[in-house]
Image 1 (cartoon, rainbow, N blue to C red):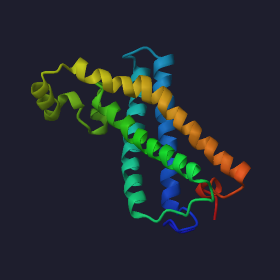
Image 2: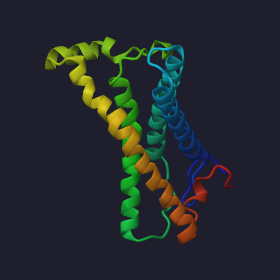
Image 3: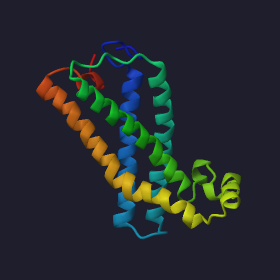
Image 4: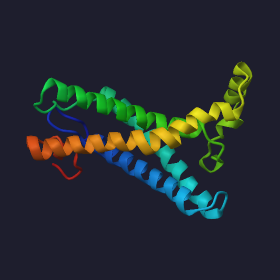
Length: 192
């Protein structure tokens, strides 16, 4: 298996990015919900799990940027035989997944007052960009942050992401067990 995609299969770069991003999102979600359900705010354990959440979110964001660039500059394998509406559904779900993979880290960073100095990143509300937004739109942090936090914590995280992941998995299993094509197996890391 080469590192580049071909017309018949995904290369190692695409597979590594796919599975590493999936792992980062899983760890990010597990740490966030562990912090919400099993720790008290502002405790040492809560701080650690939130830092894990932030770090894996930042890594996921960086890898998504690489994945988008790689996808735009790489050959895509030929799609499996399917009807036009199945191809349309696949394109819509993949576009939505990319959108959510971009929006979750962005809204997470812009919509938090949690310390990010351990990552070498300035909190957004300490930046000159925030100061400019605050003065230009005469908006308080709470009004600015509320819709971002709503998307990140209430809509995107627990609802949209998991629905899209479920559709993605069901589609792959449908192709594998019903259509009996190689849609699923060509993304598996062990396939040669």
